[in-house]
Image (tube, rainbow, N blue to C red):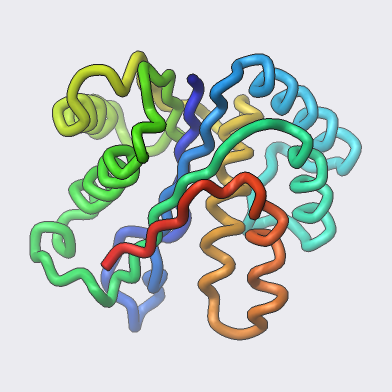
Length: 204
């Protein structure tokens, strides 16, 4: 199994000064590696035909590019599981006061709340943070999840990994559906993913 993980939003709590009201983390699951390879090829071809450089990023894409991207990946067999955090509901000083702890906690919570989907998974996380942070996160996830779920875990540069770009587009689509305003437009790309979504958990 191959799992790609990315997030949308930030772990900050200065909501009146620009911090995002929601933090969303999602994982894309490929249970068939052939499907993953074929999806990767399709994403590369879509990037060339749409003249997207250097990578697909949901928040930097036009509506037309988003539509074309999700049309390109729809034929492939993958699942999506996501966790949505309304930060106004978080009261823990430990989570509010430490961005790395906040990030690590909700990534492991998503992976723990997996309906037994993860088994010896090869996991790629969109690369961010310095090496000490990455080492600590690997240690923390293995400790929290226990044996059997993680076969390997590495951080990947999304500019060089088409499937990490898929995770970015997926989590961006789910996060956009929570934006206040034009609900039809904001929900449009989540609806495009509906057949792939196994669970979207609104954290309470």
